[in-house]
Amino acid sequence: MRIGVCPGSFDPVTNGHIDIFERGSKLVDKLVIAVSSNPNKHSLFTMEERVQLIKNSVSHIPNVEIDCTSELLNDYVKSKDSRIIIRGLRALSDFEYEFQRALFSKYLDDDIETVFIMTNNKYSFVSSTGIRELAKFGGKLDGLVPDEVKAKLEERFSSGK
Image: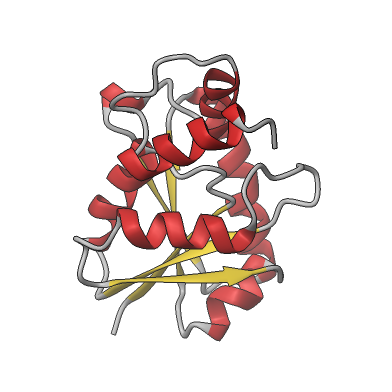
């Protein structure tokens, strides 16, 4: 069984992420979406909230599993009996960052491969950081995030949490 791991903080999950999950799930028998914490960032949503938002947003993809991790990505990938990391790319700046990460991963374990999927053009400008900022200032989120994520963002920023 080919198992792919698609890691990220997904704070929040966007339609760009969903597009990568849908397309990545066609390349493997099972796609594990690994929600991770980034120690360099303060998350808007808890790990549990992010997992639930993703679960609800990918229920239409039959071969997806959502999990959490705080360990080294290579160790996590191996623990899932995988050798494949799937990453989405939006722009050249993403490529530079992800390419360096892929080389680190390869340095640690030559058997692990990183597969890059280019985003759909309509999501090329969408990032979780941009979405959080847009939501904070009451900007239009339609079409950029799943409806449930939009509602959660509006609720979070209207309540001042």
